[in-house]
Structures are given as structure tokens and as C-alpha cells.
Image 1 (spheres, rainbow, N blue to C red):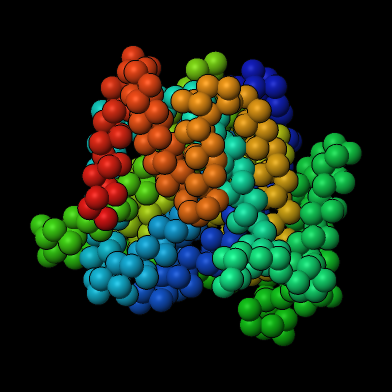
Image 2 (cartoon, rainbow, N blue to C red):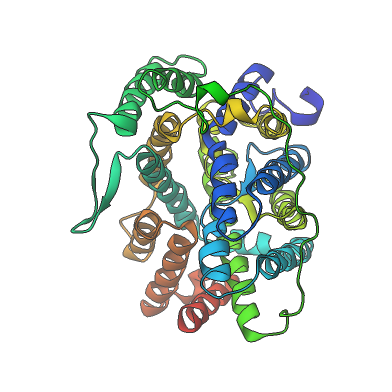
Amino acid sequence: MEKLFQLQAHKTNARTEIIAGITTFLAMAYILAVNPLILGDAGLNPGSVFTATALSAAVATLMMAITANLPVALAPGMGLNAFFTYTVVIGMKYSPATALTAVFLEGILFIVLSFFNVREAIIESIPLNLKKAVAAGIGLFIALIGMKNAEIIIDNPATFVGLGNITAGPALLGMLGLIITGILFAMRVPGSILLGILISTVIGIPMGITIPAGGWSNWSIVSLPAAPSFWRFDFSNVFTFQFFTVFFSFLFVDIFDTVGTLVGVTNRAGLTDKNGEIPRVKQALLSDAIGTTFGAMLGTSTVTSFVESTSGVAAGGRTGLTALTTGVFFLVALIFSPVFLLIPAAATAPALIIVGFLMLGAAGEIDFKDPTEGIPAFLTIAMMPFTYSIAEGIVFGILSYVILKAGTGKFKQIPVVTWILFVVFILRIILQ
């Protein structure tokens, strides 16, 4: 373990890394339940999607662990699966096979781009203050995800969002879990975030929140996984303009969700250098690309780096051993899925909220005194939770950065690749 993951150099140990890996898994285990439901609406078999979700997450995360040695876990992404089902299949009337074809070809292109360092160049082109803003924005974003999952924050037609009923149900469990986790974290109890998830899950049993989908009478610890839908592709629409728009949408969101997540997680873990550059980023991006390709072959939507990896980082994860642990648990989940799916979203919400608090600290390192740096950083932070998208936060940050720098005559501070991103983002806004 020391030779492979360099634990001492990262000032960590195997016990801490394993706890961090379990914490990351528990924080993102909801994808095993949610992804089959969403892709099931597209006409795919939920049991097969569950198997594809667990296998693709395991393969991509294990590759991240071994090749990139980063504490980042991957799985089919939220948002991307909704786009797959409700926009491409239901809205545009494409078959699930055609949608999977777009995901597959996107993954192939990602592999090519990774070998030619295109995605690495994109990450390096993001100015340092914007990288700090990405980390802070993700903090607010995942805190919002946690509050939404626990129904602490709910939809309000008059004000868009509002406070839920925190005196009962999932919101009460989420608040209790937040208090418990916050106290444990403040007391520096080892594994406090993981303990918070487990304690919240137990508290949820008498509250009627921690309950199997089929009830306790039908619940069992183990179950055999269904076979995935292997190689379910349809290439007949590949050369149409409509297919290209679908392909580009998958491509765009995955690139910048992954870039944003990698920047945020590694920044929070203290793994970036003084210029904000990520170590072994080429291997990290290649892991994402291979995960997407493999996932499409098994019958699931785009695989991407998960922002919930920050929960493991907050628990002390600093190396690929954290990701290795998470990847192994995804494999274990294939057999013990009833146990893992028992954890309610409200029990993981406190972990995401605490991590959001930790990541927001990056905002204190941003130079807000210079408006050409501060305004783009602010827009990056604000637009992530407001648009419910890491990618859109990066878009607004880059666009405003280039416009303000160019408008004030500071052309030399704009890298060439940043100019290219600016043009791409403008075209995307015009064509979408």
C-alpha cells in the first residue's frame, strides 16, 4: 500500500484512507438506487441498469485509484442521466439504444482527447482565482444537494426555493444528523462524517425513513444482480444534425463537470500545486473516459467524477487508496445491494452540508480586490447552485473573465486556450 499510494508522503495512513473511502461510497451510494429509476423511465431495465451502474463505477474508480492515485470516485452522473432520459429519449423521441450510442461515442472521443492532452489543457487554462471559485461553488452546490435530498430545502412556486418542514420526516432526520455530525466533527472525532451517516441511518428506522423499498418483511441482506444490457447500440442516426447536438451536449456537460469536480476535490485535499495544477490529471481524465465508454457498453449513462468525493476528502482521504476502497464497495454492492440501498438520502445530507462548509473556505483565498478577478469568481460560485450545474458555473466564470480582462485592456492575462473556451461557450449559448 505504501509503495503504490505513497501514504507517508501524503501524511495519511491506511485506516484513514479506508474510512474515507467508505464515507465517499456511502455519500454517493444513492446513485445505485436513483440511476435505475431515471433510466428505467427511458425504457431500460432497472435491474440491468443497477448492475451496469455498480460495475461502471467500480471499474472507473479503481482505475482512478491505481493510475492517478487520487481520492476521487466516479459513477454515472446525476443530471447527465436525467438529460439522457427526459431530453434525449422522451423529449427528442430517440431510442435508448441511440442515446447509449451517443454516450459511447462521447467516451471514445474523450479517450482520444485525453491522449492528446486536450482536456488537461482545458484545466490548466482556468485562471487560479477561478479554480478557487470552482471549489467554493461546488461547496455551495453540494450543500444544496444535501439539503434538497433531505427536504430541508424544497420547491416553492412563489420564490423558487423555500424551507421545508424541519419538524418531521426526512428534514428532521437531516437536521438531527447535521447536529450530530457537526458536534462529532468539531470534537475532531476520527471518521466523524461516516459516523454521522451511520447514526442518522439508525435514527431513521423508528422514524419510518430508513426502510427497504419492499418493506422489512421482504428485506434480505443479499441478492443476486441482474445481467447488464451489453452492447445495446444503434448507429443509424449518427450522421444527423440532431444526433450531433445530443452528442455535443453529453460531451460538454461531462467535460466541465469532470474538470470542475477534479479541481474542487483536489483543491480541498491540498493536492494541487501553487498554480492550482492537479497531479496526474491525464490519468484522472482517462479514467473518466474509459468509465464512460465501459458504462455505455453495459447500458448506463455517462460516467463522471463525483463531487461527493469531497466527503471522503473531509474524512481524511488523500490518495488512491480512498478511491480503491470506494471502488471495492461498489463491487460488494452488487451482492449486498439491500444493505447499501437501505441508507436514506436524508442520512447522507449532513455529510454533504459539512463538506460544503469546508469547501467554501477556498473563497477566502480569492482576490476580490481586483474586479476582473473577483467578479468572474463570484459568478462561478453563484451560478453553480443557482443553475444546479458545475458546468454552467464554469461557463459564466470563463465568459465574464475574458470579457472583463479584454474590456479593461488586460489581453496578456488571457491564455490562448481560455480564448478558445470563450468562443466555444458563446457558440454553445447561440446554438442550444
